[in-house]
Image (cartoon, rainbow, N blue to C red):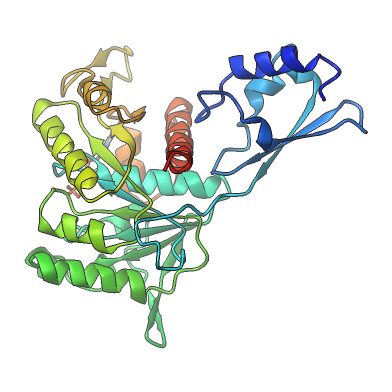
Length: 340
Ligand SMILES: Nc1ncnc2c1ncn2[C@@H]1O[C@H](COP(=O)(O)OP(=O)(O)OP(=O)(O)O)[C@@H](O)[C@H]1O
């Protein structure tokens, strides 16, 4: 087929250059060769969200770079935990943490915006009853969702459709809700929001591993869950509890994000492991879940979110890290369903 370089040599080279999210190399069935043009063109159709420059390592390669690489996306709608329901919410990913304050909402908001930048249709359901922070993080505190018949028309910001308990209730009311009430309210918010057609719906879960989280994980149509943790021991124990809880109810763990992995001094560049070193990595290894990314503790990230300024652009290496984490998450979600 790939006469120019001899099929075997071409395939071997391709397997040697893994792309973000595709550790085993690109599956051959995603590739279509057009040798009626010069240079020969290979169109890659990715079944999950990938950035525009995803194929850059292939384009830069001495051998593979002689092809004209083209990228297409056709995001797959994957089966979820409620097979009898239509897949109307896209791929539903719960973003959860065992412990509060580890940056779960920050990770949700940045991943959602990164996926949207890759051309995916993305929604966020802010289910954090203890402190719904999406209106702030998306810079939409004063927006009020309109109602359309019995449905809530959600807010659109930074390319993402956002529905938040924060718009519907005063913080202090929601925080005193107990298990069944909270869970019923969250399910209603999901159902009563007039979502557009989505590829991904990220759910910012309330922190913890109690009844509310358990019921929600069981009642929602869930495709997978991402666990966010910081590297310190107390957070890790809670992260493990979260993983165990999801596994018990049959929700696949897509991966783990270690947040606040280290602080890097902007003056001298030295890294300080404030919350301990590599704790999330150890949990990911012990639990055999993919490590999707290690995010540093950085002032620009906090500022960007506190002021609702949108996807992070600077520093560039942080923007790349977030983009890679989002791609890995989308890829792991896709590949996990290939083994079901
Ligand atoms: N990597 C980071 N660098 C700098 N600041 C961060 C980082 N991650 C989170 N923050 C900041 O830490 C604070 C808490 O983060 P966030 O609200 O995302 O945590 P959470 O786990 O969702 O909290 P909760 O348990 O209350 O829901 C926020 O002000 C956020 O901007």
